[in-house]
Length: 107
Length: 452
Figure 1 (cartoon, rainbow over the protein chains, first blue to last red):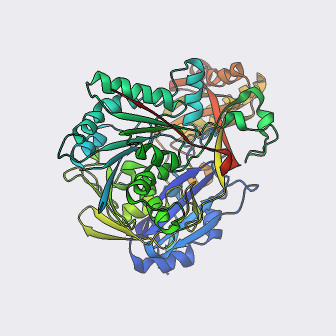
Figure 2: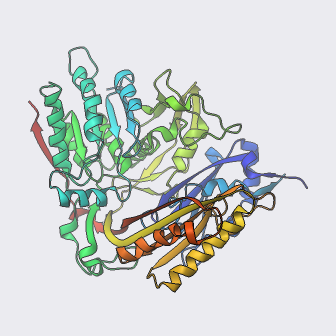
Figure 3: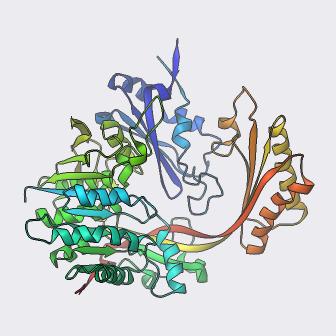
């Protein structure tokens, strides 16, 4: 089975609120949305960011927005205290979405 | 009124000014809204106000007003479309900001502009020591480190100021979309519990509130998502009808792009549950929104809904949280990565050996693992030609924080071969936590004074 990088199928933007990051994944083409729903599970995304997530914060959540062929992932605790006190270079986590686009999606 | 044209003049405090001027001049706008408050902006502004009672508003307020007030004055002439300005640039001091707007209007010779300030968001005096913050601490435990507490107000105070015929409305903390909802509520006379229309109006506010982020800003990815003329990015405007239906567009000839992709990215930006986007005005529902392109760079937004507003208001609490010290240094050429790794080990060991007291330390290799960690950041092929070490630590004591940057700098003569471009710094941490207050504990007030 062949696979492609998520970046070829979808685009993404990351937002921050306090300690929590949200990452949208928006299919370029409507016909690709079902396989994103199927393959881009909460478990898969949580595993992708395992090293960055705080196990004591809440679980990763996923919301579906079929009208705009998009998924929204909410990742509590990934911002290590939030933009105001995090020691991270990218304290907003603005670059997280770009990292998610590296995931492989089967055709 | 058949429809209303609302433009976004800023998406954050330091945003570009000339796209706002372009909108004021050529957008045929009824309202120009500047959203300029990030989570901790008010806490920082409150510190400025403590040092100077007249300070504490947005540093670009004066320049922005100097550039757009002439268009507000033009709109008051016979036969011209009236333009009004709404902004949260008042930050920690809306009254002083309003005085500054009047001063600039006078300086420009613009008589008769009505400038209103909306206050009531500052709830610092109302907090009780036992109140619990979302980070688990109590308000009382912050002691003298507590700087500010500001409730997110809704559209109500701005609507009252518009009813009083204000040309310019300056607020402190108001929920971002409420800045845009207010003129819709005022012009269309929607009831305060018309949740569907309030939800639609809130969607429009949310789409506009980050200005260039819906017109192709923060979007370009060459070869995948190209954006024309990014250096001359236009800011967005919405043409809204009395049902809350809207078309997002920008001034013809400006740079950027508006299509379903840019609109979708912005709609989900900083949203958690799309069925429940909480604002002081409404619980907006974006889950069934759809976008359709009706012409080049013109997108219609449909399908937003709403339910009853929350009974509590979110309050952002700013407090001092120690100091962050930081140092950086670069290594280049063959073996750069190994030398940067050695430098990292040396600094971390030195911080221990010399007893630097920190709550938390972090050491990253920029270009390797600073954004996404060692695992996600690791790539099997190719070693980087240059690597920059960055060590940062948060300490309760400033003198301790200073030592972090110093340790990095001493790598010049004491560390691995060939380190260059060392920098160091220390800054005070103004952290933000939040709590909820019952909404009837907070009352917006409008302050009017004629500039003439």
